[in-house]
Length: 357
Image 1 (cartoon, rainbow, N blue to C red):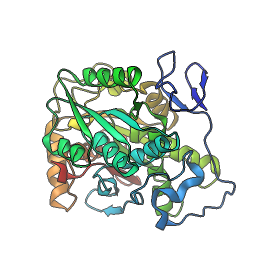
Image 2 (image 1 turned 90 degrees about the vertical axis):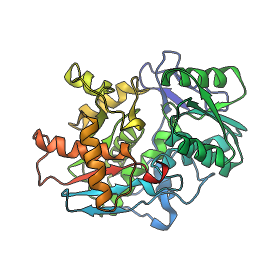
Image 3 (image 1 turned 180 degrees about the vertical axis):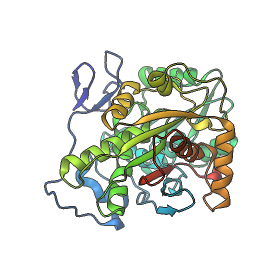
Image 4 (image 1 turned 90 degrees about the horizontal axis):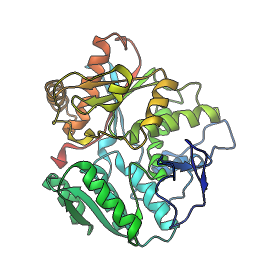
């Protein structure tokens, strides 16, 4: 069963289910599975699926994803969750594994997705693993390295001229008017069920404690909301005692959450962080609710700060893509502004591999 948390409507699950509610808001699973015991019992050898008691979908489609390293980063007085070491090179494999598992459960034969890069590559790769045809709608100027990742596994990259919204609109028209299932990383509830495992793994790796704060790049909020849901589920299950502050980092010039929280954004652009150039997040209201519930925040970082952070990461062996570096730029900015103290226990998510650049 799917439900709209905005208006309360419910819908039966199935291959013909709507991609969003009649009221225009996103749909979610009506129930959050929780384990029967308040004593944690997981096997890291099972990867992401070690947390099957928290997941609404079984492991129909998997590439052994999950349990990414948690590395100490003393230069930043933080820990880094290395989600760029997934099979397709980004954290989006968490969501893709659950989304394609659900598609397989529903008997879907063809999926469509719109993405400028990492999500499209992840969905394409897991669709190939599932034996499901995939068309990935991309901006006409998408990076060739990411198009290569999509096409190498047999998916079709459908290039669309115009804005990022034009790409989404074209994909939705195909999903609604054709025979395809919309495997959207922004709208499909299964994707967020997958990204919730970020929090589940992190708590397990820290012996069932959570940090004071987690700093995350913030575009559509797929990892941000997934982390919130995962930490909330752990607390509800009695496996942890609290939910950390969630601190988002957006790109200067494209920072709708920052503008909602703090008013008109500062002038400038940050095209370096191309992976979070989202002007209208699909779940904007839910992101704001998660920030409010965790005493969190969102800030924007410019290109110069992002490039400096990227160079520093590379010099210390963390070979990530530019969008990942906004988390580090944001960490430093939060400390400069007094939002974080230098002795706060902080984890930063590193989300995409530099090998795709």
